[in-house]
Image 1 (cartoon, one colour):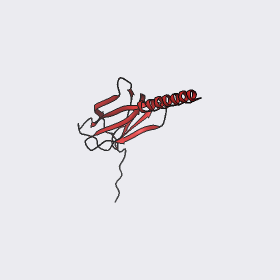
Image 2 (spheres, helix red, strand yellow):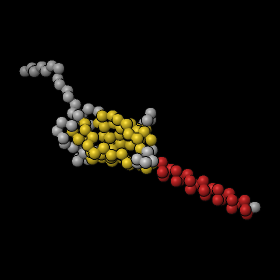
Image 3 (tube, one colour):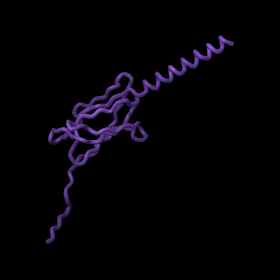
Image 4 (cartoon, one colour):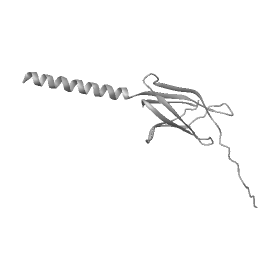
Length: 126
């Protein structure tokens, strides 16, 4: 009976250990970069960078800092859809992949183009 209890305890410990190891390894990716205005060559501050696992809801979001840099950590391995939004700029969407061999994805100068909107008609009345 003691042997059975000891064996059962060892099996439980091994199972729990492997479960916690797989969970900690599941979220080990990083996506970072720097947002740049494509025409002015200046940093884009306070833009929203969102990452979605393919076909799901938003996984992580962050804002770029004043110098245009951003970082999203603890991302799961796999393909992710990235969206970059900022007032006055066109939305930019693209895909990244975080793999066991490429856990850190960095885009040093992510160029974003300014949104060009013009008024169709202006009426001034006095």
